[in-house]
Image (tube, rainbow, N blue to C red):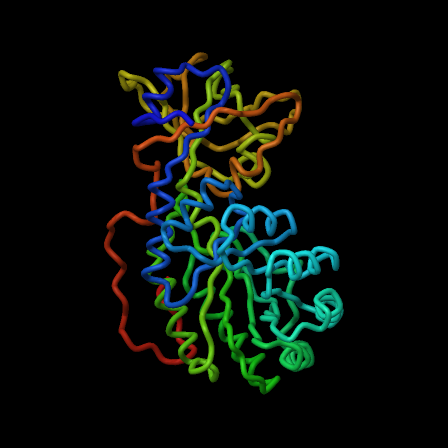
Length: 401
């Protein structure tokens, strides 16, 4: 793998004709250490965010020992890359063959579920194993998240008692898990969800060993500047401590975006300018899926040795394929004199960006370069934490947003 001090240096030295993925292991390691040191429990990396083996090894070296895997392919990948890692199969709907392989061949003992049918499937596939950690997924609100995950998975709280009791009988350790949605913009999302956990526990009258608050921890993007992560951790800790099982349960979380976003960015070349539209050599079928399909805005920077003196203009992007849908509306702010042949860095693509690339229409990116400069934005730089109203919060009170 090539190494270089900076994104600008890559663009000027290599003058690449195809997109170049930049990786920053130091940024991912910093994020991992932050979670390891400050989250009041165990952090499981959500592999789907970016399954790069290099990233997995970076996170492991920084202290992440547990991994949230959602397919048998992810199970195999992490088992091969990190043989000592603990794998947690947290997809609520799995093929029976996948469960059996994960349990018998890869030592997986932790599974999630949200129905009695899935519980029966897990027990069949594992031969009625007695060493299982089983996490029942509750459905919770995604109202504070940029991307909802509230409709596909999860048992409703008022329907969870039977499933919790049955799972308690089958499991060596019982967990409750949930997901507040991706890019949760308020710590109150977790406070609300944990209140639903409380209701489910009280109704089922079960002892719970694991409270898994899932993912949703945010990163920084243009127009989306969330509160400091410490406020999320504080809200989770206070809410979890108030649960009737706090004395006996372990707290887990499943960061994906928060650990991976700052790991990667992308250098693209402008192939054509048409007014305020730029035709670039990556797009919806490459690393910019979210920019095209859900209007996600990523930070951008024009890479020139001599910075432009022009003011910024709002641009949209077209990707390289023949598809009209290969369009990123943005707006992306760049100097007004940007032109064909210029290079642009697009940041914060380490999560659900480069990992979602396809080779549709023959366009792909094979070149990867490690750089030493800072990511274009960060949740982990020193910044003031918003003042709290008080250190003691009444049960059911709102956390600071």
